[in-house]
Picture 1: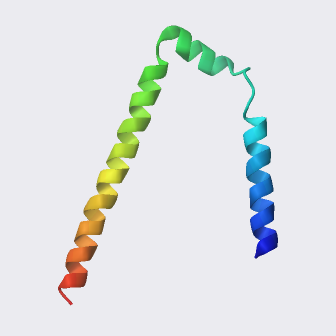
Picture 2: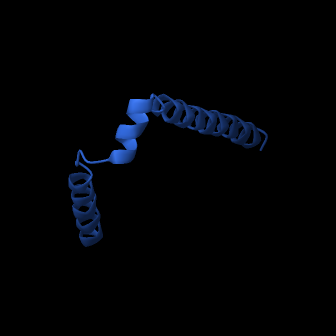
Length: 68
């Protein structure tokens, strides 16, 4: 188990290090056109919807548990 954890941690650190490049032409173009906010708003709405779904699901599960 420790070996798997170490491998996952090493992979994560390596991935983060590779992601630190400044040469992302698509992101630069989206920022230049002002469309990056469309992406940001879309992601926020999706995460908010997912969070709302999880909260409702938790409420329904709690209600079922209380009925036992």
